[in-house]
Length: 98
Image 1 (cartoon, helix red, strand yellow):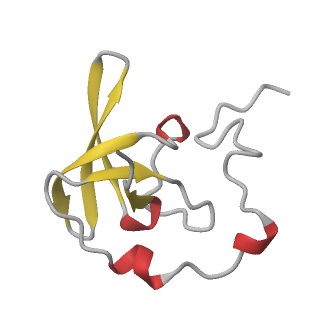
Image 2 (cartoon, rainbow, N blue to C red):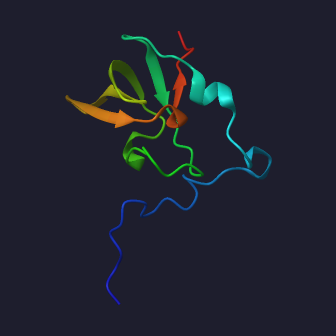
């Protein structure tokens, strides 16, 4: 049988919640209003499939560039290139690092 090359390939441990993190998503994660220029961490929530970015962006820090409906346009660096991805707020967290 041919090897699968799907969107979520090799994500067995990456897109897995710990037992105590399971359950419904916190509303603060969905309702947070990001502003242009905010730094965000792309943290994929495996229980919410819609608006999920590719696994290569999991854990990356990006900058909010705009909004499309409920989703946000995020600029992320990948090597020397800057990628513009569209992500729903369920997969974003505000970056609180220094």
